[in-house]
Length: 172
Image 1 (cartoon, helix red, strand yellow):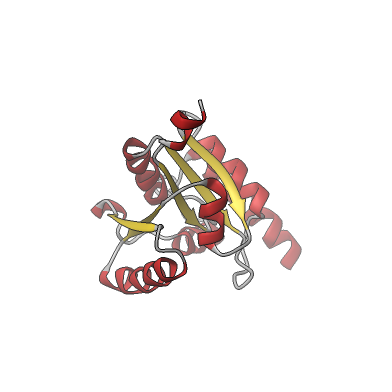
Image 2 (cartoon, rainbow, N blue to C red; image 1 turned 90 degrees about the vertical axis):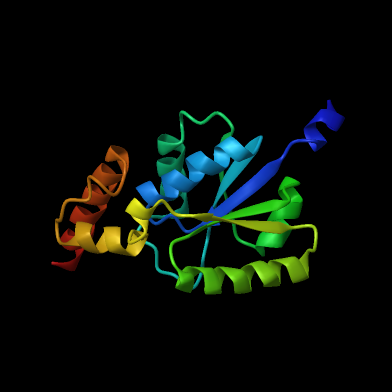
């Protein structure tokens, strides 16, 4: 049993996912087909001021990935390479929308490889229909009551509306 378990191809798709978008989902679905197990890991990034808590983001991710049996949702607050070792994963999955994304991601991938040479990073090009899409764009549109239905899953849209209502009530 342990030998079979150690032969699993395990990958980690880390990110803030604040909120998870259809662009993220495209990468998750495609990566899930490539690996035995895909861990979508919510980063507890202390340098960002997220709209959703880590727990709320995990709930949303679990909801939108419920039909993908080999996808696990987790969170971490450590160096990614340490988390990778903990999970016995050797591949980091990163979505790339543009040359600018690639330059940033290449720097991070090189740093991760320097910290742990057993960890590889694969880059998945974002579906062109999501190349403009980011969580920041989604939040901005939702804040001004724009339609985000084509950008996020219905459950995420509902959570966004609720969160924006709370935010706007608190600011009045």
